[in-house]
Image (cartoon, rainbow, N blue to C red):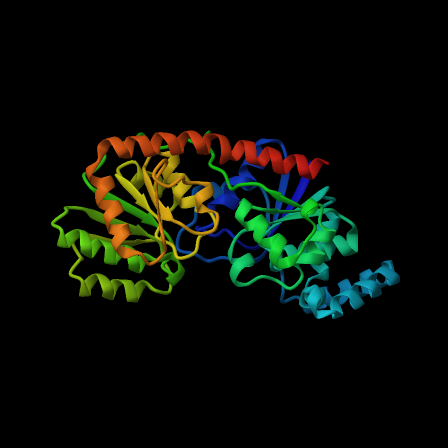
Length: 386
């Protein structure tokens, strides 16, 4: 089967779940070509990006190609071209800018003769999939995640869901919210989780370093790293020895650095910046606890990665995370901005070997069934083949 992935940008170091999905589809024998609207120039990329067989970037600056594309589609099928024009002019349909800029890319996509198109996120990538579908008839699916549902949702979810083969989202919480907020057809919605690739070689857990805390998150307000730093201040005030290593970059780095300095936590808390997935796994092999203190989190792939390495976790009690972690059974859930409770749960896990072991084993058994990349991609592939 030949499938095109349309992505807003590629490769992003924070979107390993998309990369892993593509690589698993390749292992299943699916021929994948990635079309990316933008190229990301990050300081680090995952080594596995090289395994993606074909990546093509949209060329937004070849003006004559775009003029040629409009003439091409008009003379090929003037009725369809004009219908698309009038469809695009309706602002709520959300594709007018793409109609102006990217009809040449639609030619390239059609010439590659794909059987299906899949996009991630409910904005530009899935809008582009809709545009391709309207001109060529190639069926498409798209996966919505979180920011594209709760913070920057598109206006065209209803029409896009209607015209897609399936609108996929990553949690039951997301599905129920989409049904209520956007009033789409429930029969067109499917839940397929982001999954962990259990076929990869995880680093052997080394001697867990005493009281080592790991957090992997972008340094943005919604990720709540400031609350983790405040919780660390409370731990230090109780004379608990620990080290907290925070992996990620973002716009709040300077704010968080100042917070660490103001709280005199420079020996206890370190901001490590971007790290590849392999480097993160190496850290996790030494960790006692993994913490994700987000104010908003649709599911938390970073938590899944820790669980896959049998590291006990503390996550936020928000959105779809309780579908991954059962509070006091497979980990701790803490309400956003509840710094005192977060510090107390950290203290409990650091000092209770039996509880850490119980949490990690129960959580591991769950994700091998419900968040297994091989199983979840089988579900997606079956939709494509219907």
